[in-house]
Each structure stands twice: as C-alpha cells, then as structure tokens.
Length: 173
Image 1 (cartoon, rainbow, N blue to C red):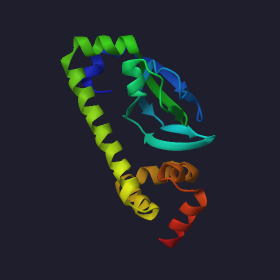
Image 2 (image 1 turned 180 degrees about the vertical axis):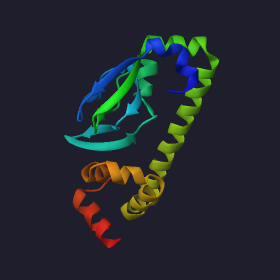
Image 3 (image 1 turned 30 degrees about the vertical axis):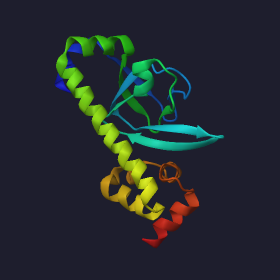
C-alpha cells in the first residue's frame, strides 16, 4: 500500500487465502476491496458454463468489482485467487470514509481507475483488430510475468482462444 493509505492501516484486515478461492462471485454485490500483498488474482465471467478470464492482478494491485463496490449493483464478474495469496482488505464503508477524509486517496483512486480504463480499452480494441497470435505476442512483450506465472488454460481464455490453439501459436514461435 502507498503511504497515503498508512493513516488507514487500522482499517485493513490481513487475509490469507489458498489458490482457487472465489473472493467475489459474479452476481453478488462487492463489499470488499483487495490489495494484493502476495499472489495473483483473476477476474472472469461465466458464459454458458465456460469461464472467460478478463484480467490478471499481481502484487501491488488493488482489485474489486469497482462498479459494484461503488454503486451496490451486482458484480458483472467473479474474482478468484490463482495462487496462495496474502491480501489486505478494506470494507466499502471504511473505503468511503478514507475517500472523504483524504483528498490524496481520492486522487490516487481516480488515477487507478483511469489506468484500468485505459487497459480495458486496449484489450477491447486488441480483440477487435488483432489475431490471437498478435494478442499473444502483445502479452509476451507487455506482460511477460503473466506467461511465467499463469497456467496456459487461463491465458488461452484471456486471449479468447482454446488451449489447443494457444499451443499451436506457441509452437509456431
């Protein structure tokens, strides 16, 4: 956590979770924000029983279904741990109090949301314009740690292809 959050250390609860733990189920209201101290989380949606990975998050990242967290609407996706994780969590109410009492926190969150928006747009336009091979190449170049830490079937899901197709792409390189 950044120094701006130090004043609110007492509001955070440390949580250790094993791999494959669902922290938020699609269709529930998000009441917690997670700060990843150690480990990896993913967000995913259910499409007729098939899980489609939408994003990966690592040490230093903040994760919640921010739309749900801020509006009390149902989450559009699930959040799950892919590795054993150490998380710092903060409740909706405590987070709201932090936003109201410290302008630096509000600015930091606005910047965080802006970065997430840009990342989401980049992914969206990549799906429209690029082939799966091009998307995989972008992933290797921009996020090599994903290739190193994430199981292949989640990477394939994230790229919008099957594991078999991903194997073919990898073998062509």
